Image 1 (cartoon, rainbow, N blue to C red):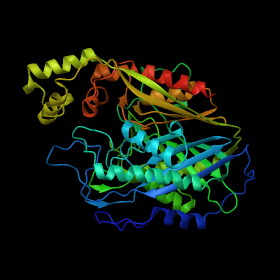
Image 2: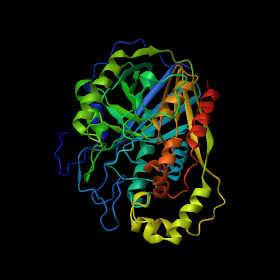
Image 3: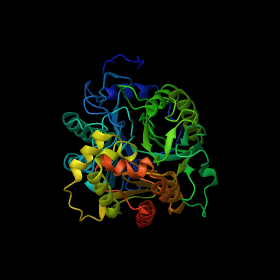
Image 4: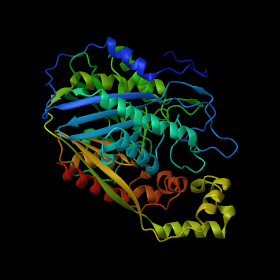
Length: 467
């Protein structure tokens, strides 16, 4: 689709365009087993979720009365589903071009998939790409209102994408490729970060890190079935801050992959709590430079992909209780109550935001000690996939990958819920935005400074349960 910046584009059936692209694809020669109890089947469904004009986008603070509303469509948005079956086990991985989903939204989608498609709810993952050029489907105080009607539409279309993916199931051979996208992302909190090239057994969270690795999962299918591409990278989808809706840089990368590789690219977001796109010359991330770094790296990962023997498909889901700092929360309430005029900037954002936060929490029962959420895993042969609802600082995503029992592990954020940032202890000492502002936006108490360490350990233990 040709892009016309600032102009409303005619909405198209995303499935039609996907099928057209597939017809032009030349599938590499692979020996793929026929369908049997001991072979992997893979299918994909893609459904358009381009939002209507006029509703709010999420991801940036705007005062009430000056909301950031959609005035045009930069690129169409989609909800994508990958269904995998091996023996009696069937799983679905959904990737939505959306800022975030709440645990309630995820639960409704998973329940309807179980009811309508027959895949157990515990085997369904609902992930978002965290694009800041789309609405949010979870509460964010003054960072974008949830559009109720559109939310219901997205839920139905995500279930439809899973249904289409299951109908598309065919025997598949898996290949995994990796490369590094240097200049595709940067640690936005410091200029002295280290990259995954130097991450080892003794690395710790006293330093800031960056994961530059692109993982490309390819599912090669015979009989004229198109090859499926799902890739993973860690970079905020935040290049654009205007009022045009779309997937942000993942959409631009997908356009190039569609044009040159004749593949439809589906994106899984990584650990980006301290990471923005681009090489850092532009703090937010300039779109052209970002794409010029990420797309060639994805090309290299596709070209370097090697077959992976898939001998099993297993899944696990566990509750994780993230510890809250109730003492600090009480201190925040007392500070505001004593001196509202002193709470008008910095960690309080502005006077209107602070007042709204206080109204919503002044009578809150402070009996909670932990925030309950879930983490989940999938074992695809020797490949592990960890799904979690946080914005992890880079160290912790790399630590999960390092300590995972799998040969290769994809650590996927923004999955099945949205609990915000899990930063390192130094972020709490410095009073960083991630540590003290975002809990107020999401409307829960702050985490204890060591919460990310505990969450990481729990996620690794979860992976060991299916290894």
